[in-house]
Amino acid sequence: MQLIETSRVQEAINGFANKDVYIHLETTNGAYASHHDQAFFSAGAYIRNALVRYELGKITGNGPFRVGLKINLGWIYAEGLTHFEIDEENHLLLAGHDYNGKLAVALEISSTPFK
Image (cartoon, rainbow, N blue to C red; front, side, top):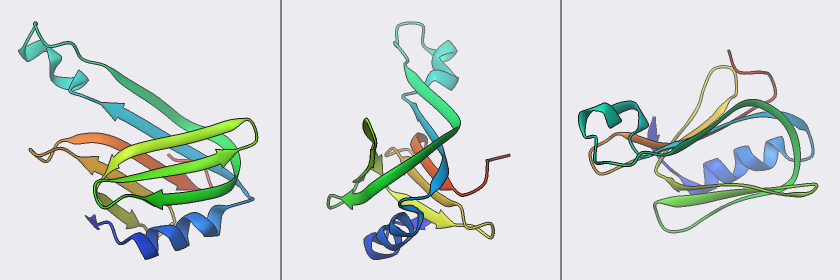
């Protein structure tokens, strides 16, 4: 993955607009490592292969970045994004890493289900 280039990410977001796409959205503040510190409250969210259609998508901010996808009845939103990749299957992969390099948020968009 590389640091986010807003113009490339926006172009990819625009390419998926008004089409049926699959969304992977995940957040964590350390849920995978909470057993190391019992006093730390961990929380997270996870959804994979949600089939949606968004009419408008936008990346904003100066870094870390935010992405919002306007769907029929509301929004899909991720913030804290720092890195991106467009893989060989044309998946748009966005990730936010904390100051220690650990994953804090992931938003992925694809025209085919994620494996």
